Image 1 (tube, one colour):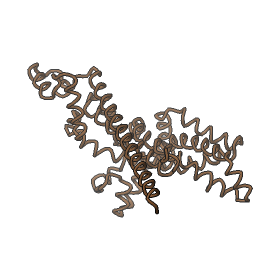
Image 2: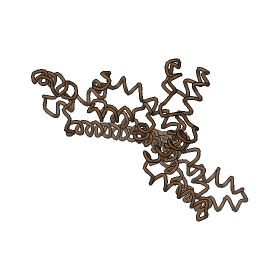
Image 3: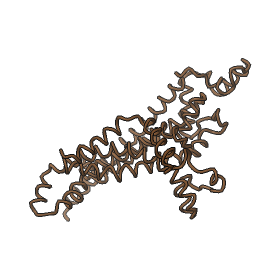
Image 4: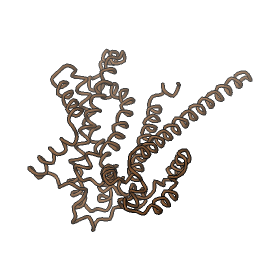
Amino acid sequence: MTLPETTQLAGRRRARANGWAGNALRFLVIIVTTYLGLLAVTFFIGRVIPIDPVLAILGDRAPTHVVERTRELLGFNKPLYQQFYIYVRDALTGNFGTSVLTTNPVMADIRRVFPATLELATLGTIIGSLIGVPLGVLAAVKRGSIADQIVRVIGLVGYSVPIFWLALLSLLLFYARLKWVAFPGRIDIVYEYSFTPVTGLYLIDSAWQGQWDVFRDVFRHIILPAGLLGYFSLAYISRMTRSFMLNELAQEYIVAARAKGLSESRIIWVHALRNAAVPLVTVIALSYAGLLEGSVLTETVFAWPGLGLYITNSLQNADMNAVLGGTIVIGSVFIAINILSDLLYRTLDPRTRAR
């Protein structure tokens, strides 16, 4: 290799390294800005809501000097910018204060209840993806047919029907009438004190420990709320899959594949779906994040002891530390899933890495 060629190669490597460093820096700036925005929104919501956090802790009948002393200890007598600095500092270290309702540190409560929400949303996303993607592909392949219309109606109902109404109706049908599922809650009281979870994900823990009777009981409790969340996830995923597949089926490489004599099933499930899977990853990730943050009503109806029910109970009892702490955790999870989906998108689609 000649000297000019070596110099040119080194220049290309430096340019590529500088491009990666610039992208990483921009990515980091976006993450920090988004998280600071989340903290700012939750901070000012906590200050705007007409609930005095000191009175929520001490009660309305607390002496004035005790109220003022507590306000001073908590830093509520300081200027707003200093309060915001303290709030950000504590949030970055995982300190969201103490819950008025449980008298535990908010972060300890969140660690206890979040696995239930994670398990519910994960199973709902799996159900929505396994059914929604094939339905979307079917609707795209059979565009304009009765099958296409049925899939679109299923998606429309999923978008339109209030989730709490459908949850109550499903409880009435599958629990009260048919007895196919267990009563609301996460586990039967018979197993509640004999079963020791490790990860907090009851299905995985019971299967890992070989307690199949507990596994069956947990499954009977989770299948209805997870199926309900899966249906709403299915509505979104099937609609987007149909849109992506219609776009791919109109491309020239599909015409070329048919001209080569490839089977229709190979064209659809291997070539078209493989290319549609790139943006579909982002759709599924956003659907998963939506279930994590939007399962409040579902958890309330099914008495599911997750983060949504925890936030609801805390809000009803004016426990703002717990409400804001739970909101920050959900927002952080949403940000993390968005970042992960963006990285997966760049990994699966080489064209985005060249930008």
